[in-house]
Length: 93
Image (cartoon, helix red, strand yellow):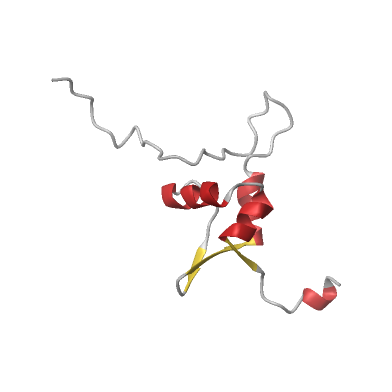
């Protein structure tokens, strides 16, 4: 069966399918997209789609073998990230 799919373009998933693929809720995946912490996506017309390869690559960044394993990378939570380098000093009034 893999040979019959060889000539086809990659399969793209809409947000609900992509969220199910990752084991996340639709809303969590939407938040990741908003904050820039999630997998890469594409806009085709007005539709947001994810390639299976991008979803798998993003999920693999969180792969670990033990709690002490630093892993390959970090999968950030679905929330706004603060860039401490860009933030100026905190001023109290």
